[in-house]
Length: 212
Image 1 (tube, helix red, strand yellow):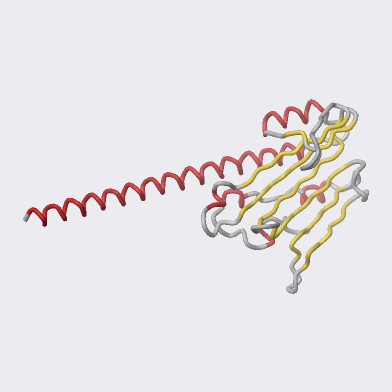
Image 2 (image 1 turned 45 degrees about the horizontal axis):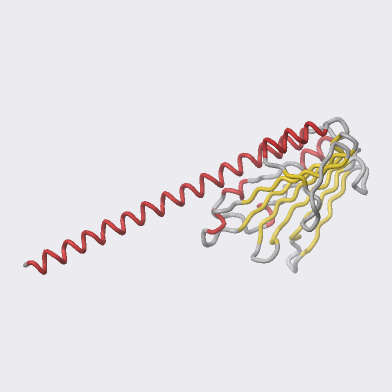
């Protein structure tokens, strides 16, 4: 009888332990999802703010304000020391879907934006949005928008790394000073939901805007 009672006690203890593990796991998953959702919301807000800047009119102070609000950092490449002044500055913003990407089956996603300041004014902006593999990107959307540093005057779309099925794994858009309002709207209509999604981000349409 004592042995039987002891076995029941151990089973109940194990059951409560399993319930505790499940509860902790669900809580941790909820925290991860909430964190990723918050980063997605901030990235969406940054994208809108960057798209609304008027190149050649927006100032170094405007770029500084965005950097303070969204965690932007001076950037001169991965191997060079960053420097920044009102005369010459590159500001980089980066968002990813960690720790959600640690969940099995969830792809890594990264959104990076940049602003270039010359002689006190914002003269160009860049955006890169990509889903990642273990070593490189799977699909990527790259946008260059500048007064002086793009080689086009209006609008250009490049479809790169086209696979055997005719699907481009990278799309590059260049916007020049003569790009129309409609062309700009299409170029910036980026759906950042993959920063906080568990599935549905395995195709080019997940990161590349429609109509390009």
